[in-house]
Length: 168
Image 1 (cartoon, rainbow, N blue to C red):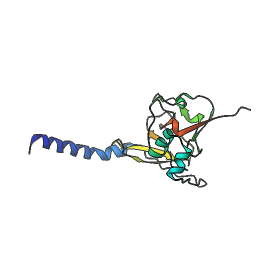
Image 2 (cartoon, helix red, strand yellow):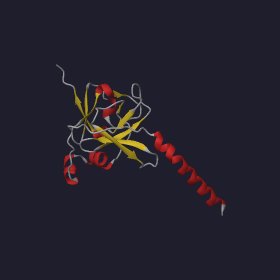
Image 3 (spheres, helix red, strand yellow):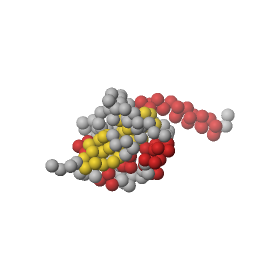
Image 4 (spheres, one colour):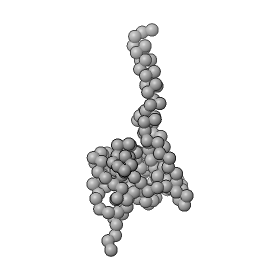
């Protein structure tokens, strides 16, 4: 056996052996849809009519906007962060913090309004989360956030709509 082939097989075997460890390293959250939340199902044409092209790419195709491109990353007013696809409340300003990553980040979420799944797109297992009503891709959750949860819900700004709190 040629040395190059042997080293290649050895490398593939090492990666295969490491995969269970990588998969178990991601946050695994046991989330369930709120019982009173009715799923929203629209055709691709209906979603395209409802969303801009950029929002469609993120919410319906799992895209990611460039870091530091969303004004919501630096939003500091009191208010609500809602799904840009169906207007479901996902986060409040009390849940937000500046992670320094360039995307709006939250340490927790509104219970029953987000669901998760395994994402292997980049070959490194990650936990993707999406809106529990419309299934719109929001972002990924990581275990490097602040207390009390230790989680960072890293969200695409285009996947959200900010609604400022009303005074009075």
